[in-house]
Amino acid sequence: MRCPFLGSLNQAFVKNYGATLMKQYGNYCPMITRGFRTLGVDETKCPFILQNVGISEAPKEMTEDITEPAQSYHYEKFFHEQISAKKRDYSYRIFRKVSRLAAEGVYPQALEGPDNHRVTVWCANDYLGASRHPVVQDAAINAIKAYGTGAGGTRNIAGNSQMTEKLEAEIAHLHKKPAALIFSSCFVANDATLSTLAKILPGCLIFSDAGNHASMIQGIRNSRAPKQIFRHNDPNHLRELLSQSPEGVPKLVVFETVHSMSGAICPLDEMCDIAHEYGALTFVDEVHAVGLYGKHGAGIGEERSIQHKIDIVSGTLGKAFGNVGGYIAGSSLLVDTVRSLAPGFIFTTALPPPVLAGSLAAIRLLASEEGRSLRAKHQAIVRYLKLSLLVAGLPQMPSVSHIVPVPITGADKVAAVAESLMKRGHYVQAINYPTVARGEERLRFAPGPYHTTEMIDSLVTALTEAFHENNISFNEFMKNGTCRECSMEYKVDIAYEEPSFKYTQVA
Image (cartoon, rainbow, N blue to C red; front, side, top):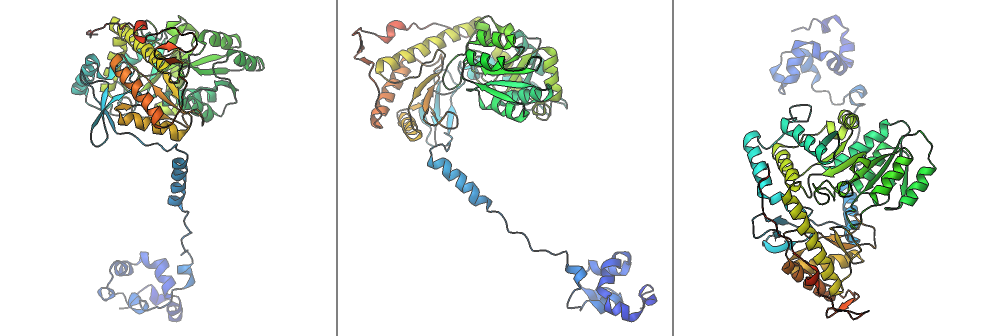
């Protein structure tokens, strides 16, 4: 059989350039195409293929695009070196397997490790036990039954519900702001809000507290706006920096009320006044204060009656409110701007129905009389722990809040003490770099209203033993209940009065 196409060509040309002709024109010939699809050449009737299958060396034009793979980077070796470095300086994080128990009579205990060792938890941020409160639990369970477990999409695509907007309205009401916006976490809320605002405000300058949380630092970095750092909780340094800034330029002053690792509380009134004096907006993180301070649990701003001085407040649903998520509250236009422009808000799945319902119930619970009773008991048990540490001569960093840090210098030492406590049935997480600076390692205690004085007595005894076991010295400010300086006798139980409270049904 003679090919009509090849028959029109010089046969010497076909013989010399047959491979090239197959490559360039094979797809246009039904016989050649069919032959290429079948591995057995005897199945094709194309004489052209039959004559060229035995070619031993392909021409250059068929092989010039074949390259040897480049040598690969040693990725796994690099990752191994990074992890090894973390382990050598004791900053490698090992997640404890701790299943916190919610039932009445066992909270705040947990089952730890593969053997379900029973321990008392001292470091959870579920400060008031809202996550296991029956009102909050019932709200979440009912929401699952009615609406399922997931949001189904972003806020813009099927993920926005009546309950979503009801929660935002409740948050705005709590903070006495016109509007609020909820996020998947407060890390995202801080990052997305600060990066968005500082990017779009023309020539924006940022003044950031040196002790700010990583989420705010990340947002400031992502904005690429010029920034200046003022000393932690130092209004005079803030004023000094602001006084050197140009007038008429947008400015953001960014800080926290309650510092998560030291327990320090900022001079909120003074810092807001200084910021406004120089035409700046205040961005105030109340993450470790919401639910815990103020008549309705709105935070330090409410406790000091200066909520109106906070331009943008950020908070969390994942600590005192016992759920997950974060939020901002502020003016309607500001919140709408963040809603419309922040990628961290726009391109993520919305909070699910059980979280919305549980958070709404928790906010209302902690704004009620029962919430005030829980806060009173919480503050009382915090005082009892601080006094007990003092009487035992154990070190503690000065803290005017509910956070009780016990300094233990050295990542290896703080880890050893935490392990000694775990063996004695007390779980507190060792805090080291990068959460705190090297040399400022500590144990961070966060007692709650469901801890008892007996639990604290046991903890202090175990902590004293752990210090001795690991050869860590401490000053005995008190000895046998008597001050070493003035010989005055002091008893912890005299200074402690336990408030009473009971569950109430909150609509």
